[in-house]
Amino acid sequence: MLSQILRKPSKRPFLSALERIPLVSFYAKTRGWPFVIAWMHRVAGVLLTLYVLVHIYTLSYLATPAVYDSKMQVFGRFFFTLLEWLLAVPVIFHALNGGRLILFEIFGSRNDRSLLGWVFGLSAVYVLLQALLIIMGNQSVSIILFWLTIVIISSCLVVSVTSKIWKIEGAISWKLQRISGAYLIIMIPAHLLFMHLQPGVGHEAYVVITRMQNIFIKFVDLTLVFAVLFHAGFGLISISKDYITSGILQSGFSFLVIFVLAVFGWIGIRLTLTL
Image 1 (spheres, rainbow, N blue to C red):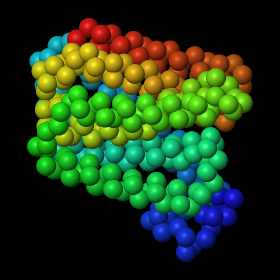
Image 2 (cartoon, helix red, strand yellow):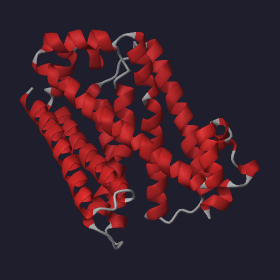
Image 3 (cartoon, rainbow, N blue to C red):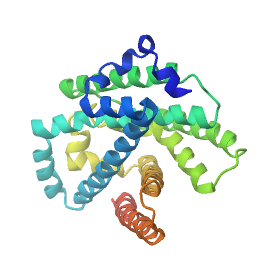
C-alpha cells in the first residue's frame, strides 16, 4: 500500500529533492520508497547512537571543569557548530518518522502519504528553527519550566502508547522499544533545541554542572540515559538480525552492543548522580 501511494508523482512533493540524489534514486527505483525511507530511519538511528556515545564521553569531562571548558572551545568553532546543526536532520527525521511508525503499528493509521508529508515538512521547519537559534544564540528560558512542560507532554505520549500497546501481542522488549521511542519523540528534539537557546547552556562547565545538580534535572537526565540506550540497543540488534545469519555471530554482536551501551550507561548514570 505504501509503495502504491509513493509512486504517485503528483502526491509526493516532499520526495522530489531526494530523487535527485543518485544512490537514493537508484534504490527508490529498484527497491521502492518504503525501502528507502526505512533505511533512512535506520541510518539516522545509527548516527544518533554514535552521537549519544560521543555526547556521554564528552560530558564525562565535567569531572574536571577546566578540561571540559577547553574542549568546548574547540567544539565552539564553526566546523563543529555546522556539524551540530546538521545533527538536527537525523534527530527530527528519526523522531517524527518513529512517531509515524507508532501510529501505523499501534494506532492503525494508514494515511502514510499525509503522515510522510508532515514528517518531511515538520523536519524542515525544525532544522530551520535550529539554525535560527544557533545564529541568534542569545535566548533565555526557565530550565525547570521548559523541561517540566516537555516531560509532561512526553509522559502523556508514553501513557497513551502504553495503554494501547499492552493489548497487542508481542515481545516485552519490542513493546518497551516502542514505549521508549514515544518518550524520546519529544525529549530528544527538545534537548537539541534547549542546547542552543543560549551559548553557555552546554559549553560552559559551571552552567552545565549547576543545571545537572537540580534534582528534577537529574531525574530528566536519568530517564534520558535509560530510554536512549535501551532504544538504541534494541534498534542496533534488530538491524543486525536482518544481515547476520550465523547464530554465534549474532549472539556475539548482541553481547558487544549490550556491553558497550552498558558501559556508557554506567558513565552517564554515575556522572548524573555524582555531580
